[in-house]
Image (cartoon, rainbow, N blue to C red; front, top):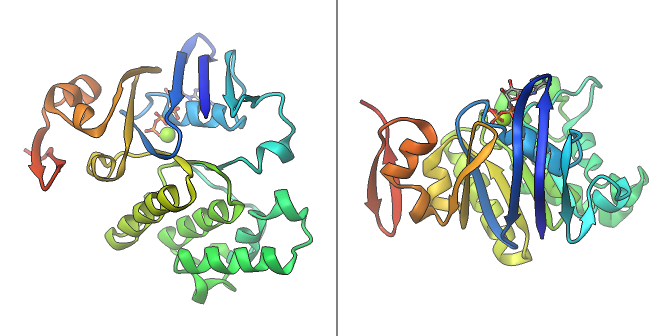
Length: 252
Ligand SMILES: Nc1ncnc2c1ncn2[C@@H]1O[C@H](COP(=O)(O)OP(=O)(O)OP(=O)(O)O)[C@@H](O)[C@H]1O
Ligand SMILES: [Mg+2]
């Protein structure tokens, strides 16, 4: 279980995450939604210890993320950041193989290699495995980073806007992949999303942030509603029922 208690982050005088307490439901997809600058990435990044917190604590299965050794944490939790910068000239396969580092320490066993191949195939990257990252399109590169996260094979996965740059087909495939991984392997996946229709369709639970705080959380049916979305985004969003899901229209 991921549990955040009074987590706070300040930049100068500005509170960007303001004493957030949150227990994420075990197993299944939790989406984090909210306007630009709400603190979504900062919160996710503190959960994975990539950003230090000024106050509060995050535990994962009772382990404090700040004090748990990296190699222990990296076998439980993987994160895809919103902006991935790689300075080294790496092939797609090399990047994905980094996902095995917590297990292999750089010496890949045949089982690690099989993980790498499987992750490449899941992300439809088999043909591009030998390409350098700077020779890929934006969406192909995004899928390569997700394949690395997948290859780390952790119970907890944090994804910050994984649909960035993806076409419709790959975006839907990405959401299905994580939904199936939750169902088949009991994973707990937290996904920051701007597309509230993807959040509505695929989430088990939605957390909405605004101004560094959690303003709403609950099942999609509670959050994807005109009143709730007005509170979160400050705009009028029409919500329609299609099959048993809620779909939003926000064009005028
Ligand atoms: N290194 C930094 N120094 C100063 N301010 C920062 C820094 N990183 C983030 N911020 C500020 O913290 C606030 C929250 O940023 P964060 O990236 O968490 O927002 P977000 O909800 O992920 O937004 P987006 O939807 O645009 O990705 C923003 O106002 C941002 O400008
Ligand atoms: Mg962000």
